[in-house]
Length: 156
Image (tube, rainbow, N blue to C red; front, side):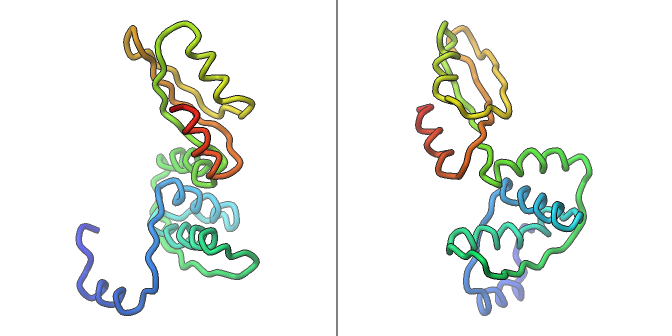
């Protein structure tokens, strides 16, 4: 919404202990989780609670406890399901997606592949920009969120 209602804002100030923000990838992962568990398709707004609970549990190191998320809505556009499925891998920290610019010269692509190493490439797109550089969009399989930052540093 563009503007939070006065009464809603007042109630949030009074009763909320914490507020979390989640990104699109986390929402997509939550939609996928609910679908796999219940065969129900949530709209992104309805999956916010699941994404937030997952983030909260990870942040607080909660394991083996029951947490409850109230979900709602099935107002999902069928054409958006492909986007959700693709982004869920990133949200689950199983894939990292990078946009990299490399010199358009002999050996650049080989050096890039050496940086990726033995990781599985899940998506790849190579576009020549001009005579001096090319843009690479690449998805790489990862084991955890920390590995994503480590890979990004190797591209710098």
